Image 1 (cartoon, rainbow, N blue to C red):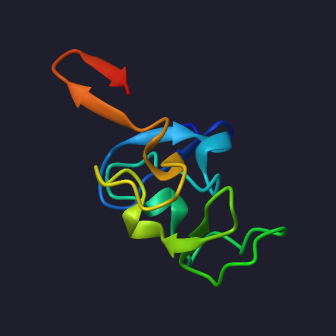
Image 2 (cartoon, one colour; image 1 turned 135 degrees about the horizontal axis):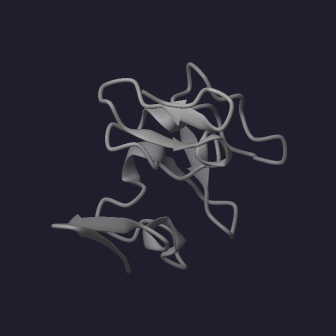
Length: 93
């Protein structure tokens, strides 16, 4: 069970992430629910529509393309700071 004062409860699991990870444009929940268009307002400075993520050069890509193993932004920032879970540890690549 998540501590509602400090953690966001992911929708489809018992996973908890820090509240700061909710709506930060990076999917932290395994199911991506912390970045759901249903719970996150559009980014204030974004030129992209809901459900899209803005690359550094203002290109818009689908949020589902974040951390999918394929660089979709010209600078590949959609694949930076993604974590890959391994047994007993998490590795950032």
